Image (cartoon, rainbow, N blue to C red; front, side):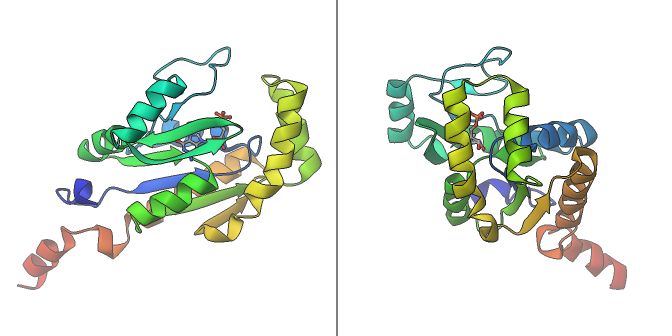
Length: 210
Ligand code: 5GP
């Protein structure tokens, strides 16, 4: 992707996927609180806003018609239908963050991850598994934001989402949110050190050994 080329260290697209309820949002929030070098990509969606959500912070909430316009205008790096609504990663969100010298955290599903991998083969993909299916259901109910029908559909979808685990670079089991966050952070820190991303090393080593 041309957007990362100007920087000392190539900015990372760091993808977190999991079935809903596996603790991904908590881990993402804790990661952002603990690391100034990464910022969330705020997706656009056609799903209705939930109580407590803020337009522009949690998602850019748009109509179906507007979403279609955005697709036609090439505004998305990827987009997919999830639970009957459309969700997409905005090119502008990713560019803004990378140009600001930070890595980008993307909370997207397996369909979006597959598409993004085509756009940028260098992305880092992390999948979070729940410890068990009953625990996943318990967490979905505890959240209390969704109707019974939505919970049922999410449980049905969870198995399908989980079946894509092997397409990811790292797979974690979320037994404990703190530990899982720490592991995700360790992955991020190690990925940042990969030689291929640290273009400044060429100059540094040339200086070092003359
Ligand atoms: P929720 O409606 O609970 O916020 O999110 C539902 C699902 O949509 C989650 O699994 C989330 O990862 C996925 N999702 C959120 N934003 C995007 C996006 O921009 N692209 C894709 N492909 N999936 C997304």
